[in-house]
Length: 416
Image (cartoon, rainbow, N blue to C red; front, side):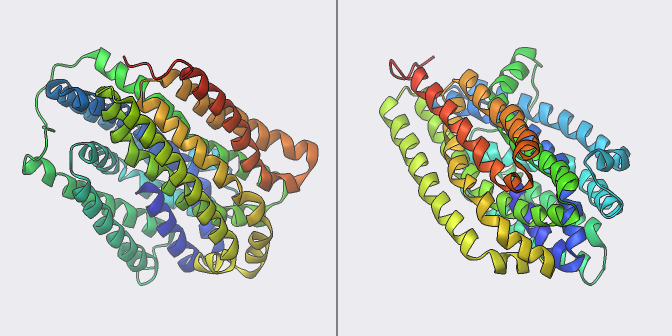
């Protein structure tokens, strides 16, 4: 849902504020995506253990993990909210916002940060409820909050002329609505999830963070890549490069949402099959996930290349930015096909108690290889290689991921 709201904000900001507004929000994306990454770390860590407990029929420990996960989530959200509210100016400067984009970026970051706490709980409850037999309620929450976000973006950006701050407020209010809908699951006492008193155990917090670390690190790939790309583009191409990449980033956000959606949808099946020690089911679900992401990535990439012009028009790109995006979009988008494999392999590994391998893959993908390729290759080869770097580093990571996966299953899946 985070990625979907990002795309919706981009469409309305691009058309209602202008290309510079779109670039300003794109410059803030590393911060907002780091927020999402930390939330995913905590949420996926918790639901991974939760799903395994369900597979074993251990209701008591499943609820213990859930309650500890909510406490950890609340603490992280409070800290992140405070950073965005009190340090919006220096954060935007650090992210590379120059005079063209700075105030627009600050406006978006400040108001986005005001809603980080309810947004975090909304994301958390959606993950747990999806594992607790309530995917329908999660779907309703996503649909209603998306409609509210679209209406709020239109209302605040066009009639009220609130600019980038309007987009941030619309997103925040829609997340609050999603949170209220998810609470219905607990009011009706459906499933096994229950809020209640707990005895704080440091070991539970530790296990949540360990199990969530692969996904948390994996989610950092986008903000770190975005930050590195923006820095290189500002230095080597200028404002047009930043504005063009803002359009591409929103397209990428939607595409990433598709692949992560598939992996998150399969995560409960991976975890519960692993907990029940059903190796045949595990391999079936993994094969299904790989094929789904592969064919889905080909379709999405083809559509992006074929419809680059209407996509640019959707985001309100000006004529110069539009022509530049049409030139570089094919250079960038082929990397989605490679990324689709990496996302699924990582989800399969961390859902089956192979956090070490998943951490290695995601650490290299998110913090080492991506930054190295983006920052170094253009200095050696030239500015044009910038748009190929996404696919290049994803391909390098895929080779490593396949080697680690095969090594971990050389004697079959080990159940713990």
